[in-house]
Image (cartoon, rainbow over all chains, first blue to last red; front, side):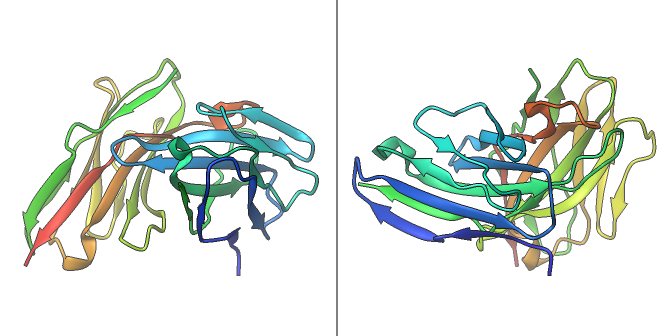
Length: 115
Length: 119
């Protein structure tokens, strides 16, 4: 089954304790991205990756890191989480075809609470 | 930069009635896609309908249809015969067409409309 998986689904942590949210896709997609969803703000892109070892900032990258060492994985790293990073996080992936449409597939979401 | 605006934070409709959710957007691109996503309480992001900007015909998926007005940059979603299972948060989203090689390949979302279905 084609899917994007995220782990953990729920996480409660404390300020300053490094954490990683994993994301994996089994569709051989080139493009992967992270979004955060906050009430009244919709979803906003944090980081994206066009392919292995190619990453770039989205609209709200402050306080986050990512890496893309393998095509299927795109972990989101919070080196020193703060309460304003309490949010719902989505990983997404899609293929890249010049001039074509590729649907974006979303993971199930990770609810993060930073105390 | 492109922006997507949903001016209705919340809408309520009686079961079996029709409801229309509004969305406007701003872009300098001529070729792009517009989407409506549904997010039920499970938080899953579900693609409801997609519209290609170069197509004049409005997209339809069963009870869901759009009114796409390219000149006005308007993209509303009509839900006919509303059902209890339609209750969710609905997001309007934009994506530039094709492979631009940048962040524009991602989605730009509106802030969402919470749809309530009254039984």
